[in-house]
Structures are given as C-alpha cells and as structure tokens.
Image (tube, rainbow, N blue to C red; front, side, top):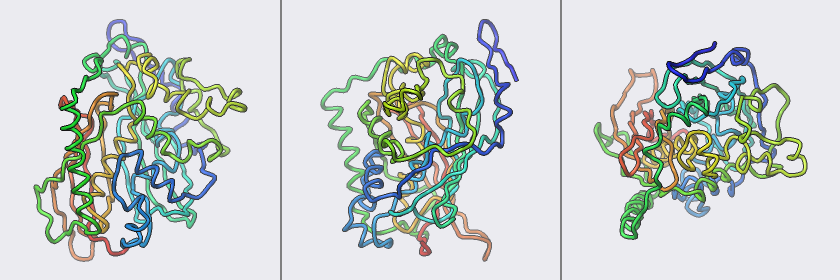
Length: 397
C-alpha cells in the first residue's frame, strides 16, 4: 500500500510490510535466569520504591516469602521494549514512536530463577493521516512471555507509530515542547515533596492489600509524580533491562525485518563493528534508540529534545496500579494509549480513579475493579490514558 498526503508531503510506502504479517520472528533471548539484583535494578530504573522488589527482609515477610518482580518487569525480559514485532517491513525514510500497549497477565509471578522466552509476530497495521507526520502507519505486534515451566506469564500487544522523518521534521508538531523547562529551586523542592508523599503512602501501606470489600466506585488513587526527566533517568531506564548487558542475551534463528526497517542512516547499527565493539549494537549509544539520550538525534527524527521510552510509560502505569492494589492484587488486563512522550526536563504526574466494580454471576469468574489512569505533564499535556482491570485480595498466588 502506498499513500500520499495533501500538498508536498512525502509518500509512505508500506508495500514490504504485508509479507511480515503473522510470521514468527527472530527474538533476543536472555541467557541467564533472572536474579534479585535484576528485579531491584528494574524497580530503581522505574523509580518504584516498593520494598517488595528490592528489600529482602520486607519481601521475606510478604505473602510471597521473598522478592518477586513487579508485573512491569515482564517487558524487561525481552528486547525492543516489546515494540520489535510491530516494526517489521521496510518503510523507507521512516522512524517509529510507541503508540500504546495492551497487556494480558495470566497469573504466574516472575521470581528470581525464572528464565523467560518469547514468541513474537506482527499482528496488523493501518495507515491514517496525522497532524504529526501526515500519512502514518499504526502497526501492532504481539509478544507472548513464557517461563521455563511452560506457563504463560503475559501477552503484550504493542502499537508502533511509523512515520516519515522528513515530513515530521517539516511539520514540527512538537515545537511547543521545544524549550526545556527551567525549574526554580523552590519548584523542585515542592515537586520532591509531592514525590515523597507518594513514597510515604506506599511505605505506610506495608503488607496490606486494597480489599474488594471496601473499595468504592469513584475512589481516587494517590497522586504519583515522576521527574523531572533527564538523560540520566532515561539511561537508567534503558540499562535496567537485563538483556542490555553485553553478552547477557543472544539472537535466535529466524527472520526479522527490524534491521532493514527503513531507518535513516544516522539511526542504523553497525553489526560488523559490533563484533569487536559491543556498544555498536547495545541499543542505546547507537541505533534507532539513540534519540532518547542524544538531543541532536532526537531532532533528526522530529523530536525537540531527548525523550523517554514508551515502555517506561506503560511500566509506570502498571506499577502505579499494582502498588495501589497491594500484595493481594494484580492487573489482569491493561489498555494504554500514549499521546505525548516524556521529554527531558518535564515532570510526569499519574492520577487514577476506580470507575467500575464488576461482580460476575456466580461461578462465571472472579470479581474485579476497573481503574482509569491518566498521565499528564506539569503543563497539563496528556501523555497517556489507560484502563486497567484489577483483581484484589488474590489469595491464589
């Protein structure tokens, strides 16, 4: 399919994408089982101060009897932040942004000693006109996460926004976000206090869980503040994924269109040099992700400055809801749409509300609550909206 926008916009050529639909793909497979340190590093990278994920003594007194991973850690067990299967087929002169995630979780918790494998494929795509870049492809790719016991841990359906770089640069739709905020000391102090208020509420919760018997429709979740974001925080997020450690993962046999996806030259990887210089293929310093931490490369693809990861946005939401649910709860389904990236210098503010309390007919399923989550910047720009189905007081895990 080839589509052109009005005026002098470029064409978006998706003719190579169709052959990748439904094809089992090459994947980056972890070599080593997950450790307590891996889980703690992930909690640190996501700025999630729940001691269940890093404090051995606290975790030993929990219902789990030791450290377990947050549900958000699932995405850290693979590569490409879950977006890899959504970026298949050559679209010349293109780049991609995260457009959203849909998650299904099936119950098994990720624990130290687990070794997850994944199955990935491109699910579908559509092309539409956007203010950001004219003709734009929204492609969805599926990743299933399976532990070493053959148990299905979770399924992720990620949306990649694939667009023409030249057109996005020309339109400069993120121009209003170009100036990095300048924070005064008193503003930073007030922001830190908002963050610590959330930390204190989480600490006070201890081992208790939100009870289905007392939760109320319209109940507000405590505000969570993250940031100001920085190149250092984005780097910490990326390096929190165990597969980014040199030699910690390998590519399985199988086809992939990821490396020949039509990236502009500055966003490519040098696989020959990577044979003796692993930084050429570690996904941060070079390659399609370098705009996250290099402002000059961010500007090459239509971003005003360095920007954060879509998978982190989804993880912040998952952590936010799971922390509210407490040790007895977990998210069975999450649908999240990402609308604006987290830019360097911005603050992210999460709020949530219980929208529905669902009690299925007797014997037809467990009761759950739906929680709507909204993520905004300090200037009130909407970053993401999400709805989670949350099970409370889960005594089976």
